[in-house]
Amino acid sequence: MNYENDNIFAKIIRGEIPCDKVYEDDYVLAFKDIRPRAKVHVLVLPKAPYISIDDFGAKASPDELKAFFAAVSKIARDLGVEENGYRVIANHKAYSGQEVDHFHVHILGGEPLGPLLSLTK
Ligand code: AMP
Image (tube, rainbow, N blue to C red):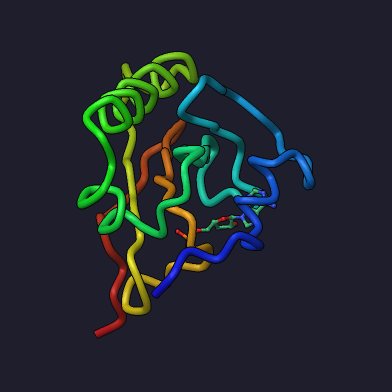
């Protein structure tokens, strides 16, 4: 699978589509999820074109990896969710329900989040 340059997060990174930005640096952009599933729901993504966590983990440079995870921690603290706790989710491919094929993690918090998964079986 190749990275598709016209995915919605690529358009947001290029400034072609607006977002509710909460953080930006040379490597990372973070913005509020348009369909929040918790009181706090922010998406954090590298600006470089990685499809998913699998692609990012395999190909990102040490600088990109460090910048990304340092940004996740900083954003969570700045959002005020560190004290009571938060969840980070990354979806990869079909079984996870990944909708957008540009790597991102969800930071969820601001309230109790319930069980890790709610599978129906
Ligand atoms: P995933 O299933 O992990 O790929 O999650 C994709 C997320 O992107 C979903 O939670 C969507 O609500 C969110 N989303 C899709 N389009 C936008 C957008 N334009 N701005 C902010 N969030 C978006």
